Amino acid sequence: MNILVLSGSPRKGGNTDLLVDAFVRGVGERHQITVVPVRERNIHPCTGCNGCFVREDHRCVQNDDMQALYHQLAKCHMLVAASPVYFYGISAQLKAVIDRLHTPLRETFPLQKLALLLVGASTLPAVFDSINVQYQLILDYFHLENAGMVLASGVKDKGDILSHPALEEAFRLGASL
Image (cartoon, rainbow, N blue to C red; front, side, top):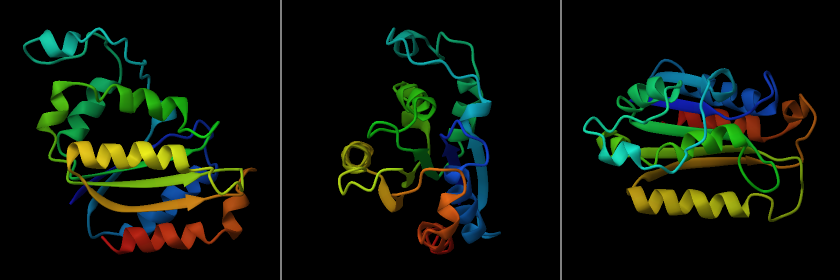
C-alpha cells in the first residue's frame, strides 16, 4: 500500500511531528510511506475560481507546490492527515491543502483509506468534535474506509506528547495496517 502522510504542523519537531514519527515506525517496512511536512511546501489557499473544472487537464490556475502533491495523491491508497488543533480546527496549512482537493483530479486518486492524527492543548471533552464531524463527512462523501484516529489532548508545549499514551496508539495504528 502507498501511504501519504500530510503533517500540518507549522512547528518543526513538535508534538504532531512526534506523533507522525510514531505512526511511521509502526508501519515499518511493510508499506511505502511518504511524509509531507506541509510547512515546507508553498501551497496557496483555494480561490474558488473553479478553473480546475473547466480546464481540459483539470490543472489548478495557481502554480505552486500543490501540483507535486497532486502527483503524489495520484499514487496514494491511504491518506493520513496529522494536525495540531487551533481554535477547534486543523491548522491553516493543512486546511489549505484539503481545500485544494476541491478538484476533478480527486476522482482519479486511488485513495481507499483515511486516518487522522490530532494533537490538542485543551483537555475539554469536545476539543476534537468539530474536526471529527468534518472527518466523518469526508469519509462518507468519498466512500473511504476509516483506518483509525489518534487524538491526543492536553498536549501543548513541545515534547509534551513524549509522556502521552497517544504515541503508543499511533504506533499501534501504523502496525495494524
